[in-house]
Every structure is written in structure tokens, then in C-alpha cells.
Length: 226
Image (cartoon, rainbow, N blue to C red):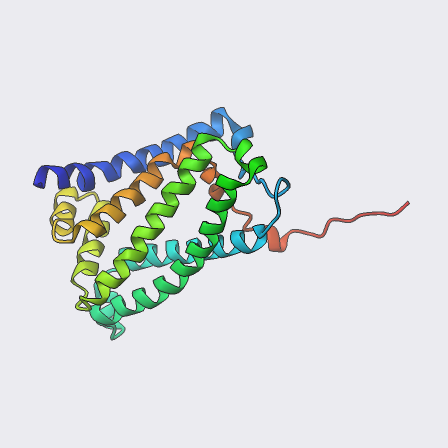
């Protein structure tokens, strides 16, 4: 078991991270014309706006919550008067709201992708795979909520935070020691999350790198009449 933990949570994170960064760079350099979201809204617009907005807002909130929650040192929360139990309860409430939003949106998108003849015909295997992978990852994340409610001492959360901090500071041995203390459901959720980063450069997810952050400040398009 220690060997498996070392392989999956001490070695695999760096493999996934290297493929994520170098693969994205290589795709942008070699295949720039594939660097897009491949929107299929023109093929079927039924519930597309609702599904897309719920999915994107929900998954962005989940990503930011995981990023801040896992990488912020516990000392900062303690200095703010937030205990481990309070932080875990906050994560459960916020994660439940964002997770349900994302689940509803992603369910509509999965149904559309698999059942709409026009959308299905233009979908690649990777399009379907990455959508189902995100769906499985989201469901696993939601399943951790009732488990966390049974243990509000923050033990699992602190161990996951310890794993994440030691991975980014290149101390995999200490990271594995932390993750070895969490349950299998959390480990599976963690493994699938790393797998998302691994397949990221080969999917339509690369459009995240080109997020239109300057769009609100862009000047209006001027259309002249004859």
C-alpha cells in the first residue's frame, strides 16, 4: 500500500503536471488551429445557455475553492480565528452550492452530448471522455460531503492540505505521509483530479488558457450603415 501511495500521490502528480504544462505548450506551438472550445451551440441551442452557465460558474467556484483551500497555510486561518472544523464546515457549505450548480449544468451537457444526434456526430472520443471524466470527478467530490459531515474535526482536510503544500514545495515523501491518512474516497477523488490535468492538453479544455479576461475592457465593435 505504501508503494501504491508513493506511485499515485508522490510520483503521478509530477507526471501529470509536466504533461499538463509541456503538453499545452507543444499543442499551442504545433497545432494552434485546434486551440479552441469547439462550441456546438450552433448545432443545438436547447438549454445550452442554462447548462453552460451553471457548469462554468460552478466549476470555476470549485476550482478556486480547492486552490485557496488546499494551498493556504493553516496558520493563516488560525490567525484569522478560523479553526480546522470551521474551515471544513465552510468548505462543505460552499462546495455543496457550487457542486450542485455544476452537477445540474454538467448533467444537461452530458445528456446533450450523448443523445443529440447532431452534437454526437461532431463529437470526438476525447470530447466524450473528458466530459464523462469531469462528471465522475464531480460525483466523487459530492460523495465526499456526507463523509466529511460525519467527521467535522478537519482531520482529512488538514491531511489533504498537507499533501498539496508538500507537492508544490517538492517534498513528495512528506506529501505521501499526509495522504496515507485519508480515506479511499478522497484518494480516488484526488487521483481523478490529477488525471484531468494529465489529459488536459489533448482535449478541448486547452481553451481555458485563453480565457477572455480582457473582454469587459474591449472597445465596442462599430457597425456602420450604408
